[in-house]
Length: 316
Image 1: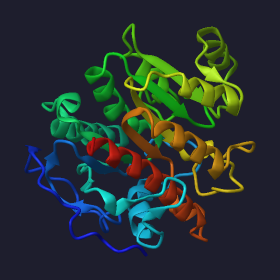
Image 2 (image 1 turned 90 degrees about the vertical axis):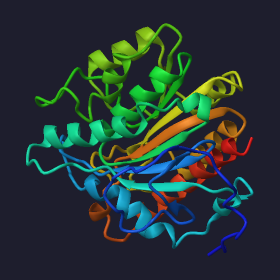
Image 3 (image 1 turned 120 degrees about the horizontal axis):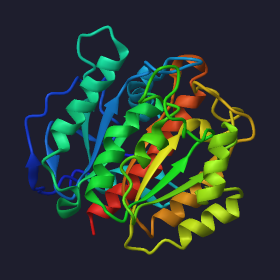
Image 4 (image 1 turned 90 degrees about the horizontal axis):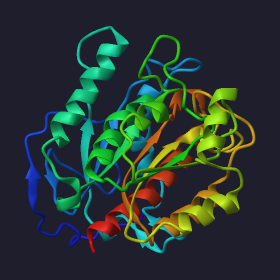
């Protein structure tokens, strides 16, 4: 694997301290384990929860599954000609689910902890970027809400096999199948939603996407839409790994045939490198479903590309 640059950790300005999270199995490869939030820094935080998953569970182990395999991939990306060790970034550990056996209480406990960590921070003024690792897709609510509050003109890019526009599912208001509907609850007049990869949903969800023109139905249309975003306009990416075809990434809770491949993702990363990507989440990796470990490696490389782009934003 690539070697660490001993000069990577330049002086950073602390903007929050004394964060009490659960210790991860190990830090993501290249990261500094630190309970401090820094200005101009990228921060990984895990939210290992799968309480509302309706088909196959196991995504609670996603954050540490990604971390565990991260040391076994190269830190250098030949697609971006950049390395994880080019810039410092930080692993804040995992949000705590608390001690309750009630899944809604667990979700709320971890979501409240995310809010406690970041609620007083001005992400935009301090150029703080957060990459949240799931966990099922319901975990994205807290970070997406924070970014929508902080960036009044945010573009939410949603990559997924599913529309996630249900108004609750199986009794859960904050369901993995409702994350985009719940995000829309916080949309202002200048926020924008762009969805791609969607190939499963209800008739009502498709009617909404078509009526509001949120969904892009071809790779070209999607990439053209991203390219058309003003370079300085803030973008948040929420990426459900079932966006990818299960032939490439079977280790996810609700797989759907007809998905995208790694190279389509690389095309997006090259576009986002020239844009203002301010935060992201990667969700729905279930390590136990794929005993070969191939899905973990695939997902770790997905995260590597994202981290490199987010890290570069702090160096500007």
